Image 1 (cartoon, rainbow, N blue to C red):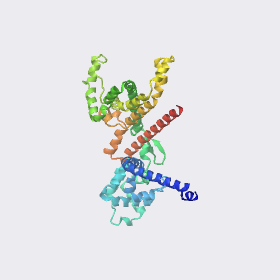
Image 2 (image 1 turned 60 degrees about the vertical axis):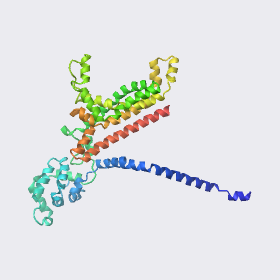
Image 3 (image 1 turned 135 degrees about the vertical axis):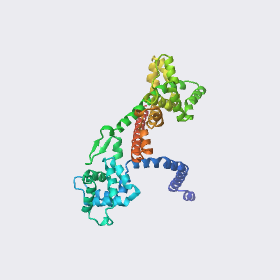
Image 4 (image 1 turned 135 degrees about the horizontal axis):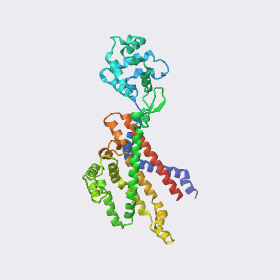
Length: 418
């Protein structure tokens, strides 16, 4: 007996053995998911992080004018402009030469102080002053800069450089809210024609909300009707619902162009029914955008609604009716609350998808119907202002994450209450 007790493994050894087995299993599981994790990091996580970094990064001025930004980094606009800043600007412009780096920096600064591009270009044409510019005294260089253009004596231009003496900036994120930083460092609203993005975001959210409501109004009764069908017929109808997914979005939009034009099928049908005596303007305006986006995004509302409705037992409504409830009251108080998770999921899918729409408003909408995605594409492909494009994309991403968090919180609360 004593021999058996001595040779049996102790509880500590058993625990270590189980721990090694669990570690081995976790390691094998990590190896299995590693390719997918690396793929997601490379395709999704890294581009998103790059976009967020680019939204607050502005390296053009620091890279083009390194000496000037170094001198002005700790300078206050309330103080006189140091003479060394003029010498640093001269050396930076001369070093850039014909590489157009000074022009890129001036173009970026021109968005903050009008006339900066012409000022730098005019000064670059006068440089070098002589063969030994680096030996000139800073105060002499200052006087020569002022002789070229008196604007060099205005601290406003130097303050713009000082505000951009860091590789990171808030100007792009401020611009998305129609704000800008003043020469004294304060933040003020942009007025007049320069104010645009608040209207753009408001229009984007309004269109997305209208499309979401339209898809829920159309999708809820359709999903309810499908859920009451036998499984074989329901599967057939769901194939028809999913059929648009197999058609190119450009083809669907082109089809709506044909249907909604003045002589199209929609206007002909409305005039034949006596609804109107003349063709309605349904193209290149808000109605055309809403109709097309509702049609394209309708399956995103039907799918979660149908999956939730299919799981709701019909006995609940029958029991409420048998206890004296009106059929509509039984539907509203018993059936509808059980489908709210599907309503929330469908609304979230449609709303988030609608926020990022670009092709449909661009082809079917007018100038006043373009959404945020249109301006992201403009800054990326036309203006080549990646900072502004990434800032707009970052705001959309933030809104999406907030909506998802609110949805999770509401759904989680409902589940706890139930």
